[in-house]
Image 1 (cartoon, one colour):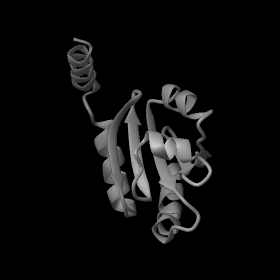
Image 2 (cartoon, one colour):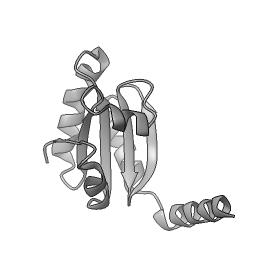
Image 3 (cartoon, helix red, strand yellow):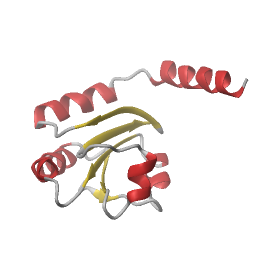
Image 4 (spheres, one colour):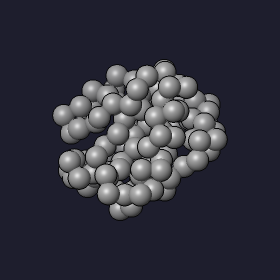
Length: 124
């Protein structure tokens, strides 16, 4: 599946409608972003069950701010609507595949229980 442009208007639907979502926060002037772009695109072809989205930080500054993006490229991974990975820096192809397999292998019942427990602590 080719990568999709993600905007403020499409973020919620994209994350809610897909089990795994990988977002690449980038900018056109960023050399590491340019190096990472074909790696990200190739991974999207190898993993058609995952939504690969690109967030142009220049065009979507509100998303970059909401995700506290301080350095680009930054890769953010969601699983079942929960952020399970967020890290700046370009990723090599084999490392991206390894990250994808780690995200696939997560026990989400434990993670959802942990998120619920933290939400309970915050509301007290």
